[in-house]
Amino acid sequence: MRSLFVLWSLSFPALAQACEGTARAVQAEDTPARAEAGSGPALLGALALQRLDGRPATLAELGFARGEPLVLCWTEIGCPIAARYAPRLTRLAAEQAGRVRFLAVDSSVQDDLAELERDGRELERGFDAVKDARQELARALGVRTTTEVFLFDGRGELVYRGAVDDQYALGAARPAPTQGYLVSALAALAAGTRPATERTSAPGCALTLLPEGELAAAPTWSRDVAPIVQRRCEACHRPGQVGPFPLQSYEDARGRAKMLASVISEGRMPPWNADEHYRGRFTNERRLTPEEKKTLLGWLEGEQARGNPAEDPKPRTWPEGWSIGEPDVVFSMQSLPEGEALPEAGFEVPREGVVDYQYFVTKTDYPEDRWIQRLEVRPGAKDVVHHVLILARDPKDANFQNDERSYLAVYVPGDTPSVYPDGYAKRLPAGATLIFQLHYTPNGKERFDRSSLALTFAKEPPIFEVVTNAVANDEFEIPPGAENHEVRGTLRLTQDTGIVALFPHMHTRGKDFRYVAHYPDGKVEELLFSHYDFNWQESYLLPDPLSLPAGTELECIGHYDNSSKNPNNPDPSATVRWGDQTFEEMFLGYFDTVVPLE
Figure 1 (cartoon, one colour):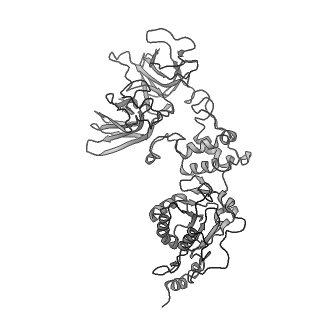
Figure 2 (cartoon, one colour; figure 1 turned 180 degrees about the horizontal axis):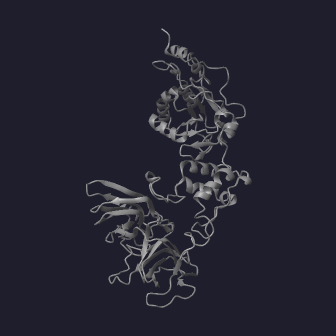
Figure 3 (cartoon, one colour; figure 1 turned 90 degrees about the horizontal axis):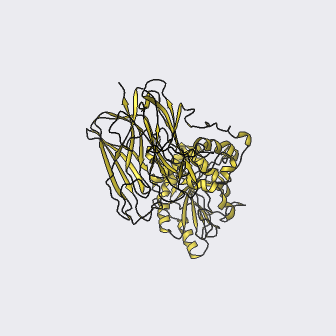
């Protein structure tokens, strides 16, 4: 009876010819076990690879030739023999843990990183995998098939290359292997001897190596990196903005390459704290796409090639002055609540110490309500202003209090100006008095502050009024040393409500913050989960109003880290309660709603 492979090869002769050694027994070859000419340990260790998360890597960085033997196991998505050997290699890797490292390598140009990561999960591969995107490692070693394995000793010398064993071939399989080539080579290495068989052919799908000119070129600043930096970084990293340094030139980026690679790979930049599963939900999302992150890290952790300056993108034009464009009016802090006018230079911020919240008053004189479509708060001394909260006191409201649960405008590090679409606006009451609440954080330098609010009014009466409200809890108590203390607050909506923005607020012990809607019919929906960062607070803007019916319970859930593991914790031994200062805490789940106007 003919083997299954023979029948298969008669039916598909061209494909059978493309696979090596499938109908014949695997034989040791006369060629000694070595890499191709010129591919010594130093060269192999320096070749560019990619981790499955897109970060660049080299064999040297992964420990090659540093004392621990290494098995490189070639693979390919869709190769049936590679898939069959994955569990066996996983078991071998587990048996050799601590003595020999295993690494899967994919050099097939059609396999992308996401597919490789998914394939590894499905195969339950128990060791790391990398992508040989430019096929440099495959060329250096002369890899022929997608099942070939290479065993290197701790000095980076090749000990064995070839098949794992002789059980599988495309279209044929023995009940069990009769030759365990890799196992025998590992045993010989452990015994300090040479394997009896140093090289075999490896049945599997033939690896296609493309001409080098057809492979993706290494990224350059001009062609690949500068457009991403303009799009994702310059808004903050340019003179006069919140970023601590500019990122507008090749020199700016190259000089900070290691630091930039670190914050990008860790997901700290660009700053965006909404959890990954909310990708694409909010209109002001700053998150890099996987492809952008891959390109940036490939350049930052690679050679940082300049490229052709003629290919540089045109410098981006940013608005001078206010980000919202030329405003209709600008209001600045005028006086203290007692009526004492501020000096021309502004409020003098102490060089040190804790400064109580300061309140400043500015009067408006509009005889009728005005509707604000764009607003932006600008701190006068940005390096000592932590936040600005501006309230609008309606002279017709005899019960007005400085309630920070509903504000007109706000500035915090990281947040963006408020720009409402046509038909939406915030109300500035006729004759309103603006209350500027300022939180200062002295930095040892002489600073004077006169913060300002710029407004652009709607050209037509709006259809909806934008109103800020908040879920709050001011009665919590965080125990000393607590690593994950939970605080909750709820607010029952008494009328149908359309939510357009969410803005969590905590202080330095804040870890995370969730908004959850409990609908009257029993349905529960999480609206946001954010990883909180006191130094970079932001609103999360929805593309369309989220309709919550009357009777919905809007719940906010936050966690605080009051332990010594929190590097921002001012005092892990303190019992922490609600308070204005940074060393105290707050729990506020702000949200913007839209209210139909009659």
